[in-house]
Amino acid sequence: MTATVNGQAQRLDVPAHTTALDWLRGQGLTGAKEGCAEGECGACSVLVARPDPAGGTRWTAINACLVPAAALDGQEVLTSEGLGTPDAFHPVQYEMAVRGGSQCGYCTPGFVCSMAAEYYRPGRVTAADRAGGDAELGEDGELGEDGELGENGFDLHALSGNLCRCTGYRPIRDAAYALGLPEEGDDLARRRTEPAPAPVSTRYATETGSYARATSLREAIDLLAEHRDAVLVAGSTDWAVEVNLRGARPPFVVGIDRVPELRELRIDADHIELGAALSLSEIEEGLAGRVPLLDQLFPQFASRLIRNAATIGGNLGTGSPIGDTPPVLLALESGVVLASAQGDREVPLSEYFTGYRESVRRPDELIRAVRIPLPLSPVTAFHKIAKRRFDDISSVAVGFALRVEDGIVTTARIGLGGVAATPIRATRTEAALEGRPFSREQVRAAAEVMRSEGTPMDDHRASAAYRSAMLGTALLRLHAEHLNREGNPA
Image: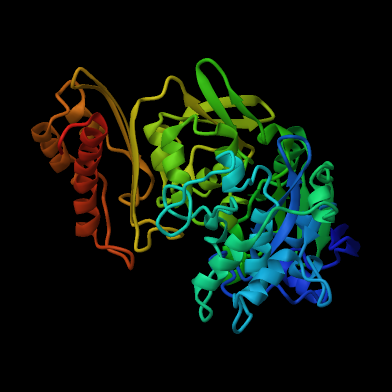
């Protein structure tokens, strides 16, 4: 096995459960650091060459601490060392240096890689280009609804997965907003016009376990049939934490992140189909606002670094009761398409989960896609209650999708996370809303019902009483937001 790192072919000869971070550091590329081993700090950020929808390559920032080294077989990686040299800084490195964006330097290479991914993002244009030469800036000299899009087109959320403990974020932000567009002759910019590396079929076995990358759905299904105890890995943002922090060592891992049949996004007349191995960032870009409820979810799902790797199939496959996508997908009445040697079968998501991290998926099946029926309900909202606004695990998550016609709720679908052993539908609250006026009085009555949904528990994130209170508050908030959108006083 080999991977191209900073333009040079490198042999991949490590134990099966070695992370990309540990392998890179073993090659002497020690710019990437391990700060948390679970994808929260971004100190391990590197760039990988991923396919662009236009047929070229996109430099994508990911957490190297979460990627199996074996998953890099045949792939192309760029570390902070590959961006520039001490005698010829990359523009990102130069701006970080001259604007005081580094102090102890531990987090700096990770910031540089995440910043470089945004620097090379296709479609990034300056405010002057967008406004025909005359852009109107916000109070802080920045564009965008939340004031975090620079006039150079840099989206500061690209750095949301990178933490700094000593420098402070203002000089890092200043460095990001000082960047121009890539100049003519920039080799990494030119690389974007060429195809990304194709996935290769990988078979890798060591004394501690085996790794196999499937390059087709048929191959993935055959591997599952041969190894009933296999662990399926796509973005690996959840499973790698088990490997890093809890010492998990599954005997056989199947990589399905590049299986073409799992990476399709289709919009048909009656449904939208999202391939299970599409990353959340790819879905966000591919849908381009087509599903407003998902647009509310994306910015609150971890960080951009995580969303660049985490997949929608993986978020369902883990079966976590606090995953962010299930409440939204439940509200959208989504179905899960399961594939096996016998073919496909579709299961309503409301019937998919059977217990804590358990589901109806058989050992010989994998999640092929998620289907969202059309048309969509027009009144939607995603409320995530957590200790931090961004990049945090939810205490409670609620997805709403309602139809309100002439002031009457005709349909109501509400998905809940964090209040039971599985994600659930708030069916009693839905019944309390449907066929009744969407009025303050009726919503207050339904909010009392919603407070009793699920079986919330006390833990280190929130008490059961708090979770119940937040359920009722979420419905009241939805009603107030709807009134404001309709131009009526709350």
